[in-house]
Length: 173
Image (cartoon, rainbow, N blue to C red; front, side, top):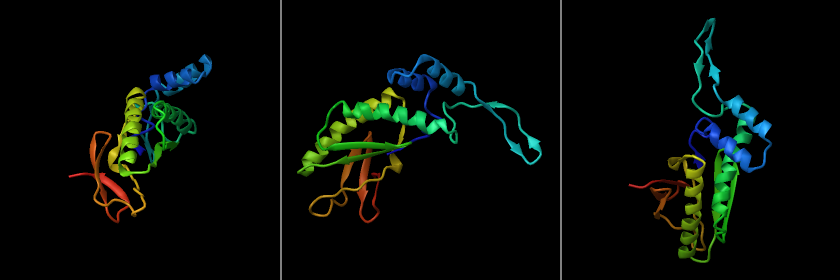
């Protein structure tokens, strides 16, 4: 799962809320908030300098602190997934990507676990105001018979279809 516009689309208030929930001292939360608010930038091309413009997003890609702050937000999403304690589901994250492993004895059991995990995922995405790029979703379906081809399912309110030989899932049609 890839987060859409991970850095620039996360609100400063959500970052401060998450830091408060993690027990980060107030002075540090205030510093982070003031650092991320009212940011300005201008572009230089050759000898010409543009005008100052205010940036709309919460974090700036390329800053050393941005990946760390974003992983705190993604960690909040993962906590919401884990609240449901779905057996056979493992969740991990690296900066703005989330990974899920779902195992089960039968097709039905795996699908039930995916649905339960998805409820927590949707809850966390909504709570922390994080959007995902469903079209960048990549997946692999493995079972004793070598996988299911042409399988369709719903994921994050989108119709998804497994495409044989492409090692990808795509929006269904």
